[in-house]
Image (cartoon, rainbow, N blue to C red; front, side, top):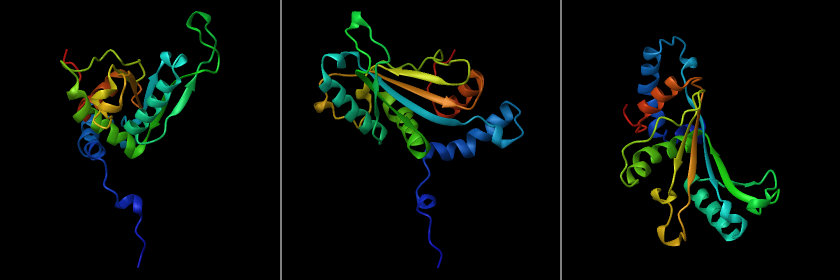
Length: 191
C-alpha cells in the first residue's frame, strides 16, 4: 500500500483554484500568451508594519509583532533603523517595525481573506485605488486600521496600527498585474 503525501491531501486554497481554472485562461486570451508558464502569477505578499512610536514605547512593538503573527500565521521579523536621525531621536539599530512575507497556501489564504472579509469591513469603502502599481507589476496597498481583520481581538488592542500590503507578481507591467488582480476579485475603483 502506497503512502499518501500529506501536502497533496490538503485542500487547495479557494483563490488558487480560481486562478488555475478561470484566471489563467482569461489572461492567455486577453494578452495572447501561448505558453502557460509565461502567464503572470502572484509570487509573494509582504506585510509591513512601521512603528515610529516604538522608539519611546517598546511594548507597542511587542503588541505589533503578536498581532502581525496572528494575521499572517507565521512569526514576523523585527526591522531596525539603518541610520541615525537626531531630529527623530532615532539611533542606528533601534527596532522600529516588523514585517512578514507570505508564500504558497498562506499567501492565497491571506489574499482570499483580504478580498472577501477585511476590505468590505472598511468604513465607507468604495474600492481601492489603482495608483499603487510601481511600473513593474507590483502593487502596494496601505491599510490604515489593522482592526478590519477578524483575527485581531478588538479588546486586547490599545491602539490601531497601519499596515502595508505589497503584492509581488511576475507580470512585468501594470496592465497585466491589474487585470490578474481584478480577475482574482480585488475591488479596484472603476475608472
